[in-house]
Image (cartoon, rainbow, N blue to C red; front, side, top):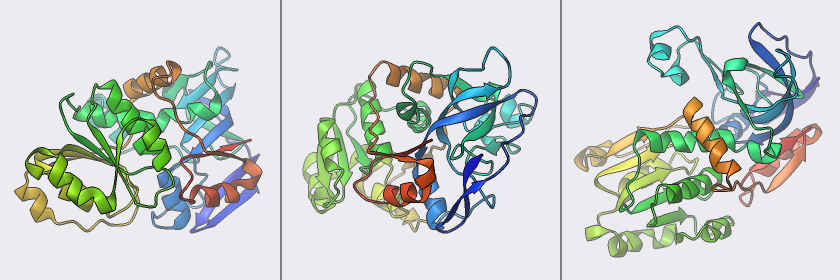
Length: 329
């Protein structure tokens, strides 16, 4: 089968490799579509060290089961990305996404940027009625929902979303589901993705306007009640600390790979809650599918590229105008 294998920074090779063997209790899935996310880009650029060399990236994936239990063959699926042991103390507490024995699809275990991949039956969610390209948004949307599950916003809150990419666009749509109407999207002055934010009906504040906006438009000029940091930049957390009010909440989702340098004293003095969010669980995956299926959340895909042109796909994903690039067979 053809597979995109990453050996190091910008060293992505399309190679012919054996189709993976299918362990007991797992399925073989033919890839239909796989999104390129911020973590994939960090691996590709070398800012996030690889956990496996070579690695087949791709965890925002949708495919069709072609091997495994007969009743599953032919079903269109999206997998959860954490393949846990189910036996350790964290798994028994329901924290299986943090299992110390887990393997993570497209992170330290070969992912979906190939003609085929394998996944355990227990990780599968069925999306027979969804377009495969659209279904690649289930995984990142589940991660956004996990953040709100940990510390949900209240309708009266003034909320900022830092960033203008795919996670920002999904977060804004989910906030509306929670009845949060006072949302500001914070974007770079020259961001070409601002048009998508405005289409969602939120106020767009550029970085050059931000300081004045906080003084004029937040209570006592002290900052936002809640900030979602989804910039994909190591500088994002420092900015989030600056614009969050005392005892406010920061949801931290970016995984740029590079270290962040922050003024921790300021975070302590302001008594901020900083909540990291990694992946969705079974519950959030189901909710994400419901939101997409019902048209409540509408993912944006700006480009689709064939697997045979996977290097072009990654290079395209680095362009600032791209919200989401999806690789298809």
